[in-house]
Amino acid sequence: MKYHIWTAGCQMNVADSQRVGSELEKLGYRHTDNYRSADVIVLNTCVVRQSAEDKAAGFLWSLKPIKQARPDKVIALMGCMVGVRGGGKLAQVFPHVDVFMPPSEPGPLIDYLLARDSEQAALHYRHRLQDEELALVLPRHQQNRLVSAHVPVIYGCNHVCTYCVIPSRRGRERSRPVGEIAAEVRSLVAQGVREVTLLGQIVDRYGYDIPDGPRLPDLLRAIHDIDGLYRIRFLTSHPNYMSDELLDTVAELPKVCEHIEVPNQAGDDEVLRRMKREYTMADYTALIERIRARIPDVAIATDIIVGFPGETEAQFQRTLDTLAQLKLDVCHVAMYSPRPGTVSAKMMPDDVPPEEKKRRLDAVNQLQEQIVAEINARLLGRTVEILVEEKHRGRWKGRTRTNKLVFFEDESGTDWRGKLVNVEITWTGPWSMRGVLPGQQTPSLRLEPAVIAGIGAPGD
Ligand code: SAH
Image (cartoon, rainbow, N blue to C red):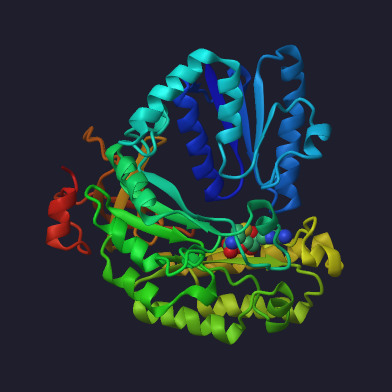
């Protein structure tokens, strides 16, 4: 029995799909890359923009003949297309779907399969007993192969950015307990994971929904002590919750990477006000300065929406000016897409024409490409520490602490996967870099000797 999971959208969906895979494996299913040969097909969907929703719907329609030919196959629809309220009208539109699963909830699919098959129910029961030791069993094809894993720490979102459909699909904020997250990270490390990225729509609001609850810095400290874990990242941040304590914790804890993802969305105060982002450009610029002052060598990523309703040429120009001035490491840019039920879709006409949105998108990408090329070029000739993730087309692929991609070649036959390696950068481009292994590996410069002793020196 085989399963296939199709995943669209954000890292949270990647983590959710992994959880579904893990639960399916407990029932005896095995992963396949080929959805046509799968007995269970899961579509984990994204609806943040119309294009994402169209893609999911297109794939879903293409499954209809497969389901008609083989009614015993199970088709499960998951994620933001379904939303916290479950299937509803979707069941009428897509009658070939057997199960609807809200974001982050494998439960309905597992219950459906258990109800069908008593042997699976027995297997599931045995696994439940073992689960106390291992909080998350990675799907087999990822065990001792997956180096970098995503771990949701807070579900949902309480903000109401006027363009954003996510809060209505993922519900109110719910933080996971520190102990549960730490147990999950420990189990991932035992299965070969070396880096975790803690996830939340606004990850720095971790714990806000719990009276006197922990905060993100507390969580970072709690998982920092886990032996065998080399690196910790977190995303996405909102400018209004990036406390000095959080930034200082990032700077202080050796395993927490100098990598911050904090969306700006627009470079103009009036647009920001209509987006209900609740900060001004002066606030955002001051935050970037504060981050840079407190975290040396930090890399900062941002998100930008172009063509928000009413965005004038002058307002868009301020976004370009901001990017040119701040010189951030990454800019994810998207054309505004009106989403059902959002404030902007209801109240603000989508009045920037599609070709103009595209022109603005291209302008941002072009500028950002130059900026990143310049930033990366500064690394030429420098030695950087990378965590190796996999071999890709004959070259090893890793990331710097600042989340930049580095490729290197090595014919020695050494398995570098999951190891920290220092490489000297020999070529840089905007999207990746190339490096070479120095003759001798030297230990990480950033990790304290005690920490290195705890996690094993690179190359061991
Ligand atoms: N809470 C997350 C949101 C994830 S959505 C965050 O703050 O990053 C990821 C990005 O998609 C957002 O940052 C935004 O730039 C973009 N986005 C959200 N809604 C959009 C819409 N209606 N049209 C275009 N882009 C959108």
